[in-house]
Image (tube, rainbow, N blue to C red; front, side, top):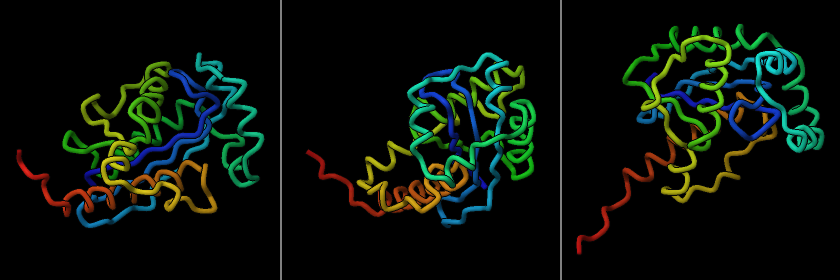
Length: 183
């Protein structure tokens, strides 16, 4: 796989927020293939002990979500274990310097994962220049994000798969678009 879509569920929307779950899938934007990926639940208490922060309004927001979404963030492994499993998944599926990692927002999923690697003292498996933004492709291709939401919306793995599909569809749409006339 050349591209990877990462989604995280958190107890905040700022840098160094507590991560509750990580979902990631590998995909090929040319063929449309998406692998099964992995989902890793993370213990919020461990994140706080490592210096990550919680935001009360985000915690309250989670209380209003579906039972399935709330169940997906309950409990989990240590932050260190989750990040090591994420790195192993990337290594096992061929992540390299030509790969891209996509997050939903230029300053969120990928950046918060980088923050987590930093506080845990583990080398991040990607370089800053490998990060890509799903929202930009969605905007440029005029896609309707709501059309990609399933019943399992707000679970990290389902959202990572939906993001991968948005990138695939957006790239195909943009490649098929005619160039703007030259002035």
